Length: 468
Image (cartoon, rainbow, N blue to C red; front, top):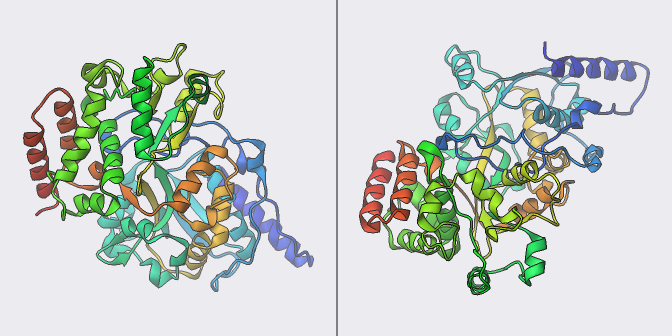
């Protein structure tokens, strides 16, 4: 039995004793549930990238504020009886598992449900259980598994999930063949730019709020003799993946989320003029040493982790780097004396019409009262608020807004709460090896390749991956 299960068992026994004695107070969450909880790693490098980008567990511990009590409120136990069990399978461990413990504690206290969790990074274990007809009641995994297990899953509508807690653009990625099969549990955001507030202040620069202001700022930096961007994307076989993220964000600025989703579903061909425009905008910066460290060869040969550090070197080699949330933890590790908010910080890509990121869903294999209580709680406003308070990454649940205790998460939480769209990574979402083809195509373009030919090849790979 895991330490997590033992703790939960003790808590349930304690609750029973209090009830027997007439006590009506809830028990406190275990103190170890809030230690070393991640803060800055809001996103991950694409799985197809085969990189060593840090996972969310490799982040800084939260401030003392993260130990605040969960948001209180009435919890609907959906007919679950005390002692009813829920078997769970997920990839989280250590600090992440402790944070989940904190999130679920109010449900345990209110309903007396006993959780039977199991942590593994091996998807084969989940596959084996499903194929044997003994799946866990719930699994926290990836969107692709919603497709894989579509016929074995219970829909969120049937389970009574609260749809009003989510923007439809968060439900769309977890809806398979018109069935809402995954509860959006975590959201990661890629559409951010890292910079040094201290350097900006010293040079008289202000954070841009529109794409036009960003473009003007880049030109002002060049005029001042500064290099605006660090855009290195070398990553072994996955070289080019950070370029694909940047180009998708440019598409979201220039064309919007419907256009990007059209590429993902195949209604917009990858050789569309809007795709070409985004590539050309990116290429203006990524291939010229006036705009990025080392020009085209610097973009191609500089490891993506090295590129993250250049704006924060002394003296800085660049002013900005567009990278996902995990960059914060890497900057802190490389430069332990720097303070976030003063020496390094981020802003959302200005002018973007919808964010780029990823969704981690919860899927349900067995419909029981206890499982329904879990779904009802996590999809409630209280569930969203408690997730935010546990500093367990970002929640798509609207109830999380304003309840983050980590300033970096709060900034991204505000962005998620106010976004008008959300798109998953194009390369990660289109199957059939399209992601690898996209990385290679971007690399060829930066190296001087013919853009028309590159986009035509990628449009063919897109159609093949989508079986069109």
